[in-house]
Length: 104
Image (cartoon, rainbow, N blue to C red; front, side, top):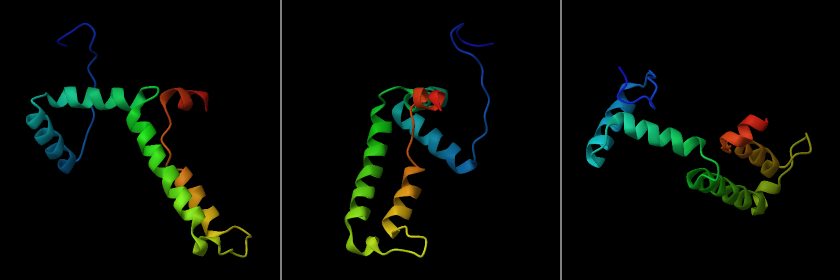
């Protein structure tokens, strides 16, 4: 039975290490583990999420540093520079908001 008509049951699996971290964090913050997971989910899928923006800003800063380094201008036979290759890989790590995911 769910504690509220607004909440839907959901079951997932996490590894032992994550379980221990979650349990300790929840206990420290005096929250239930379920509440911590709900908050994390809300934060992850929110539009204009500050975590999401901060993460992507960090990636952008990394790209700027790599692109500006003289050693990263070395070119491979493909014609791409090391900076180009690294930038492409970093861009794959960008987090997208739920709205962006739905658009494609």
